[in-house]
Image 1: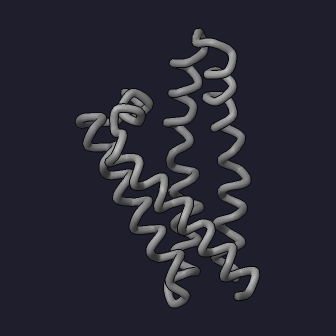
Image 2: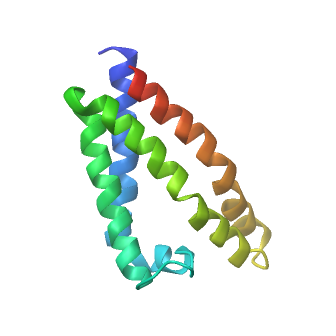
Length: 121
């Protein structure tokens, strides 16, 4: 297995796990949906879960890997407002919880970089 293929499968695994948790534990995601978005938070939670699963499938398949990697990068950029919302909402929680919420924001940069590397492989 090549490094690029392994990197793509790892990204697909991450996206699959994240997408599945949107259905298994939607109550975690609902509160971080930015309030400015129209419609219900649950609909956005499920839609983002579907998007993550679809992107995971695209990344996993070599024929659609480039498109999937670019879509993953866009998806990681698109969820940044939810991470900012979480950080704002959790700023009065215990330090460990705040660290998790604040840590999600800069984590988007390496995720986007990873997705772009997959797209180029």
